[in-house]
Each structure stands twice: as C-alpha cells, then as structure tokens.
Image 1 (cartoon, rainbow, N blue to C red):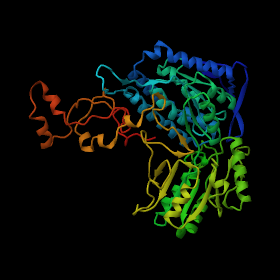
Image 2: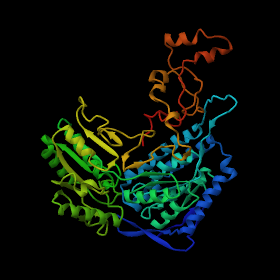
Image 3: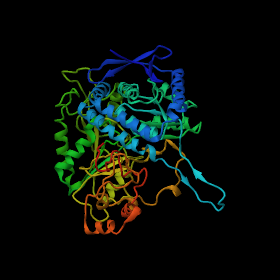
Image 4: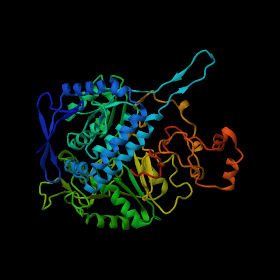
Length: 557
C-alpha cells in the first residue's frame, strides 16, 4: 500500500499525532493508499510555512513575470506527468481513465492562461480636485489562501482556484477530500522541480476536522471551497465569523431541455453524456431532462434503451463507458435518494439499484438510472444526487420549460437541443442559469465560468487579489476594445510579448492598398510608430487572450 505524508515547506512530513487513514479504490472496494491524518497543529504548521514563504525574500522579490513563467513551467511538468497522475486519480475516485487523462492534458492551458495574467494585475491613478494630492490604487495579494477540494476531479478543481490565487501572488494551503488526496500530493510535488520556493504550496490531508481547522485559522486570508451546499454553508458561516472572504462553488441541478424540432440523435447523445459522463458525479451534470410533449414518449424510450446498454466496468479499460461511484458514503446517498423517489411514486424506467460485477464484486457500482412520472417539486428533482440518476419531465410550451428549468434553488448550467433559436425562445433573462450551451458546445480556457443562486458565490477570477474592483473601475464594454479578426491578422507579435500587452508588430501578414496607405506616408524617426498608430491596444488582463500568443478560440479545457 502506497504511503502519502503531509506536504509542507517543500518536504513530506508525518502528522504530529502519527495517525493515518486509508483510501479505497472504488473499482475493487479495497484500500490502496495510506495518508497522514492532519490535526489542528499540523494545519497550523502548514499555514505558518505558507505565510513564511509569502513573506520570504525569494517570493517577494520574484517579479510577476517570473512568477508567471514558474506557473508555465509547472504546467509543462503536469503535462509531462499527465498519464501517471491520471492513473492515480482513477484509483482514488473511479472515473474513466480517458476522462481523467483528457483533464490532465487540458489543465496546463489553465496555468498558461493565468501565468500570462500574472504581470497584468494593475492599479489605477484617480484624478482629484486637488492637484497636489496623488491618489492611486495598488492591488496586492492577500497572503495565504486555503483551498478545499472535492473528490470528483481533484487536480482540475484545485487548479481552477489555485491559478488566479497564484497569479495574484498568494501562497497556498490545500485540504483535499479524504476520499481522493493522492493526485493532489503527486501534482504539487512537481512545484519544487518547477522552481517555486519551498512553502508556496502545502497539503494537509485528513477528515472534516482538518478542513475546519483550516477555515478557522486566523492566518488564512481567504478560503476557496468546491463541494456540497451544506458544507459550503458551514464554511461561509465560520469564515464570516472572522470576516474572511470566501469563494464557493456548490451544487447544481441542471436542466437539459429538448424541443420537438431538435435533431433527436444529437439530443439523445447529449442527454446521455450530460448525466452518465463521470457517473453523474459532476456539478454541471444534466440531471433533469425536459422533453417537449410531442417527442416525450419516443425520446424517453430511445434514451432508456441506450441507458440499459451502458457498459459498467474497470475505468482503466478502453471499452468501459461508466465507472463506479467514487466512495461508499456517496453510494449510500444515491441509493437512499432513489429509494425515497420510489416511495414518492417515481417510475424507475431503467436501473435503480446497485450492481455487482463479476470481475469486481466489491466495487461501488450503481446502474445508470432513469426516473419518470414524478413532479419537479419532488425531493430528488430539487436536490443534487451527484450520481447517475436522470429525472425526465415533459413540458407543453416554452413558458413551461422556462418555469421548470428555473424552479430550483440552484443555477449552474443549462443545455438546449433545438434546430434554431426563434423569436423570444428562452430569452437570456428568463434562463436563470450560470452557463448555457448547445450540444456541440465546447468549453475553453478563458471562458466565463459562473453561476447563480446557491451554486456559486463570489466567482470573480481575481477574488484572491485585494482590493475587489468596483463597478466604476470596470471597463464599460470589453467587446468594443477588442481588435477585429482582420486587425489582429495584420501583425505577428514577438514571442516575448505576452498576450494582453501592447507591442510593436514584427512583420505584416497582409499588404493591402489600405495597409500600404497607412505605412507609406510616414517617414523619419517617427515613421514606424506612426505606421502602427492605428493598431488597437490589447486590454491588459483581457479574458480574450490566453498565454503564448493563443486567442480564446485556441486552447481547450
């Protein structure tokens, strides 16, 4: 059995109590790794190590540009070790290897992006009536940021919070889920090789008490948490008692709306992927399917038929389509919620029970499940299951679809299947969801990720930087500042010009008469400057740009 200790100050250290706990491979039901169990005193050591690193000359003297380069180097190392880290995550949470590998190969783009923003965090000079007074703002890092990570995609969700916090110049203490800690320890060990000073990254593994000690620690300037609604409430209350800011990414109950004019083959595939990908253990899982009445029966039968053929098995196997539930407590939750739905009168169209596989009889497998004939006000339709359970509801009109979609306290994601957007169909202000996408939509680095209601609180990507910008400081409209496609194609920037900076064009890609008219009249020492005066300045820190010269339509997440 592999042993993982706490990681703090650049070293592996045992817990002060010497206690440990085991993690279970959900595919086999057997323990595969042992972790040190951190107590309050261990959390204090980790926070002190992070604070020491934050105040050290090595970190304070590091320019933002150099910090961004270290982040890019860490991204390179994660990409190089993607296969090994993905295998560790599969052992920890049972998700498909191909899914975990895809995540690990996409994660570097996240660090490239925020590494490129590190030297674009700027203040401003504010004019006053008194010219003798200089009034300016300077954005500074908060200090130590505590990040509490769930078990479903540990490294990916860590980087979501760690990227902006690190770009702003903070140091980190991570508390992973007790069910999936190993991949985070493996990943952050790469920081030393990347060249980060010791103590910038620290990991404390343990149970809920360990996370509570991190939230309560006075040396932690901010908490970022991804997980359940209930735990998020408790963290917000505890942090609020000492006026520490928090960023919460909580649950979802996302609708997948299919209109009668949709291409049913694509709609069917979208519904299946939306809920059974990752065995439904995703905050944006499409756990509520809303089918327009004319196609309800036919599409329900199609989806149910495909659901019954989904292949469960070893997540490392190429032909496996769905793996196990990640841990025993979560399996118990899924089972109890489905049983309660049966008691409320739900019809189990497919699945509905635990499955024992011949190759893995002790594995934590649950059959892909479809529930019908139950109202949108039922407990299972209103609460996040976080498992492979789909509620199917019919709707008669667009107005009813909007009402059903919004009839939940969550607001994280929405998927639409339809031929064309017509008239007033699903006006944006009526769709109170955080993210909206069509079935063919792809997620990319730099794209807005947000939510509403009880799904997300304080989702600002620069929330780890003090002070929080006011509305008056924000640009009125980003799109009006962006260069057009034709304007961007007129020059190639040098490699040293990171995105978001204004730089000189190295050479021209097009030599149209209009372009020549701009360049030719200028002469003398100011000729080159005047020739490029028409070029729009890139907005520093713009989400339009990714690092290494990529635009937002290049890297995939």
